[in-house]
Amino acid sequence: MKKIYHVHGRGPLFCNTFLVITDQGNAIVIDPDAPVADYKVLLEKENAVLTHILLTHGHHDHIGSVAELRKAGAKLWMNPNDCVMYPSRSAAANVFGQHYANLYEELEDGSIGFVPDGLFEDGGIVKVDEVEFQTIFTPGHTNGSTCILCDGMMFSGDTLFNGEIGRTDFPGGDAQKMKESLKKLRRMIPDDTEILPGHEGFTTMKQEKEYNPYLQG
Image (cartoon, rainbow, N blue to C red):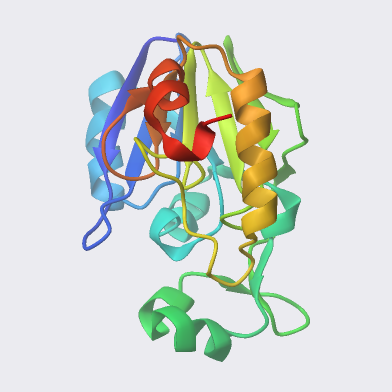
């Protein structure tokens, strides 16, 4: 891996988004909700080409630039369980507003979500040049929430935060599944792993095991 950039997403939720540059000059963006221009500046600086979009989950504050980046040639990868996010555009608008509902593709049955280019597998690997991303299914915040391991870091989306966890009261959320996902992470993830969540500050797995009340026991 040549470099990783932390790029702040749009307000008011300011999702943490990340741009990974490979040694060969290809780039991978995780949860692209920053303006496309912000990524273009970094891509030009590194003389890199964006080839992959990886989503930790399908919520509106993590996908704001997906459509435009796909038009430019980037391939979308995600958990199959988040490909359909809402039964209709109007249903999504009732929850989050029309602007956010319009970020999704309309599917054949009238539901909205995405038709991705690649699908994650639990424990699977997405390899781009020398960089490997291991995908760990962690349902709870959404049914398709996924944590992504790469080079001693874990992009945890809205599953695990610094001292907190993601909400489970949105459509597709499930408190019991979240509990099981957190047990899975506690069991699988090494203490020295840096946790890069979807919002707020970074942390480590060791710190979360010690101080996050949701990871106790």
